[in-house]
Image (cartoon, helix red, strand yellow):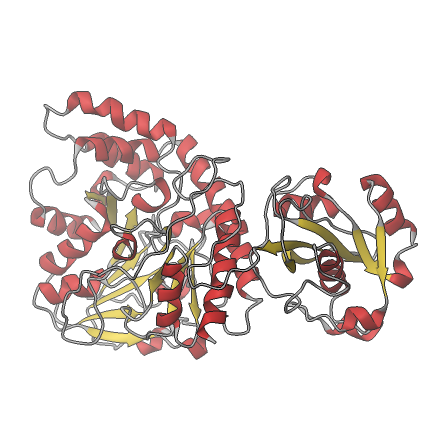
Length: 549
């Protein structure tokens, strides 16, 4: 259990500083033996002291048995706080259990840590503190994890710089890889910026359907949590394939090999595949080519489908999913006479993954059902995907290769649909709509090696998303949409628009939520990033919330 939780935190046994549990269990063979094997001291805390520590994941069973709702989390936070320079006895020098940005790798500077456990084993924190600090705060790196006989949690103490009171307060350096940087490279601490002027496009309602995440970071040196493109992409092997294709630019693009590769990947005939310049082109083709009378878009979701339909002269109906329902789809909410329905899965920005059966229930004769699966390859196993299905009438599935593979600047995606629909869309395309480098990239991303890499990345995103959500759960002011399955999370904070501006001053770009129909100024979307970036963001968020008062 200890090793498994350490792996989840990205740590090794060498990072362990101490073990902690209920004092009545500290001498038990399992706990004492774990401490001896790891070569660290075992600390025991009285039940009353543990019960006084707020924990993010309380449970009734340990409360009844020991008086504390989570021995593992409370003990981890207590012993981590006790290890902070200038702190004493409690979980850090501020609110116990509130996330300031935990350190996420063994050997990183600026963290001293510990662990907590109930049962017969414990867990570990991160490496020793470095540099002068006035105080530190105890935070959970990994919330409690359970087996049949053990619960285990990891906490660390995150130090804060002394005498920092300005809105552009510096964050402590962490020696981890950063956005668009090579792993292990030193981070760049951005200079505080004023809010950038955004490109605005007036619409017939209050929502700017043409606003996208790239506008949040354009011309700014900000750490990017606004754009959902996976970092450190394209991988080297894909860059080389694209670069090698440049020798053939004198010839007109030939999409037959790429089209065949996509068809094989989804076990479909090539006549059911259309390659496009990203999913955005597919939305324009659908709006212009299909004989639509009453289109309906299920919101909140990516706004480009509605914008394309409006630009083509259509009056668009909206089905607004509700927060109190977890933004889950009820097929009965879609009007019976809608002849085109558009929905995302997993949905941007809610990160909700709808059951395939629920979406398929929207299909009926005479209706085109468009499912935007741009982020489906970020879901392990692509469960709930409708790609490759031929038994759903009127089904159109859109896929993008720009998010997982970092090809937003290359523009490549594809449509899967009935041959008749593909033919209509293809006639609406200009000649040679997809460039030779994009076609080469599409073919390469369909290989077995690429699909295995994407699957590994999807699992890694899940781990990093859990870390982000655990950190956000420490803030009483923050409410996240439950059950996130995409490479991003949606959260609600009262006055999130002001928080977003303060985060920009601290060097972080978050995606505003008020441009999505069904959301307002109190919503933000955050892309899932590596652990070090998430830790620094949580630290910045805490400061932004404190400034918000």
